[in-house]
Length: 78
Ligand code: FES
Image 1 (cartoon, rainbow, N blue to C red):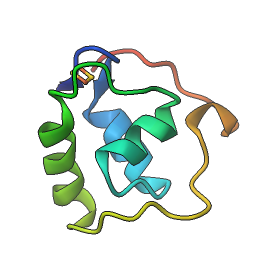
Image 2: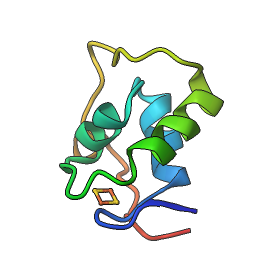
Image 3: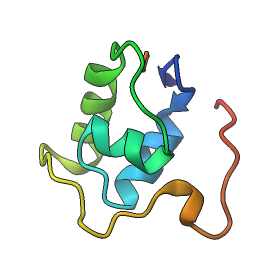
Image 4: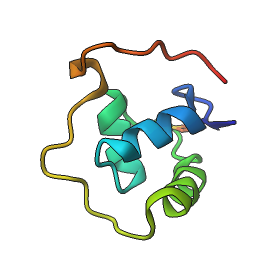
């Protein structure tokens, strides 16, 4: 499922960001090296994060950016 049409962020990317410490939609964008455009995806990303990691809103302090991780995965849609 695509959560962010503007930045092509799908469920897999949100889950990947969460696994690396993202705990808010802004953290997911930071992890992906993107910025919000329209912001309409914020509720959808927040809902997915809530399903995956609960309601915490703080990013892990050592959360990497996606492009800093070895074995980078392409941003293809599901
Ligand atoms: S849908 Fe995510 S910034 Fe527009």
